[in-house]
Length: 258
Image (tube, rainbow, N blue to C red; front, side):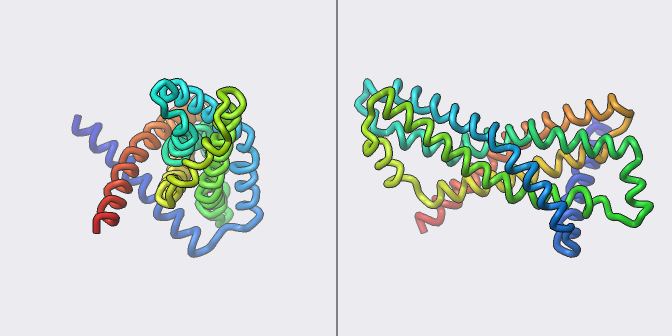
């Protein structure tokens, strides 16, 4: 048991050092713009279809369930607010992070893991090229930028989906759907969703890259590392989401009361 705990602590410490080193490299000697641009395109633009489908379908389901649960209680006018709140604060950041993990995080881990087992990373070091600056830093920057942007887009698609089914299927007035959103969505809701998305983006990129760098055992090892990275990212996203929710709600309550 002690060996397991010690090994886990070693992995955590090694992972934290990776984050610190990547941040240091990013600010001390930023990677080339062309590398960042490619990652921005790969993470952001190429993820738009899956993020759109996820956000839109989630908005449809939220609106349908909200109307079904609230209409017989005379609260159908709260349908739009429930859709917007749920998407902006919780479902938008989490579902977007899940989609990015499955589409981008797994690919990052597999790519870097293949480079590691084929000794391409060692070749970069032999040519005096810092792998952190050349491989990980562009992904780190792109993930921190694009995941919040994709989250906003996912939330927008969710509200659009909820609007369409509420207005055109359940015959709710557009004004009744939209007015509670504009009146009750606060800056705190928007900021908390962006903070979650930003943190999720950093964890997705760094965990995927870390597992790729630790890959051993050839092709089988690459597959194992990729699977483990996805599972770890999903678990971390859920745990960190809970911690951030409790922390930010507590801070907001303290600020309002003061």
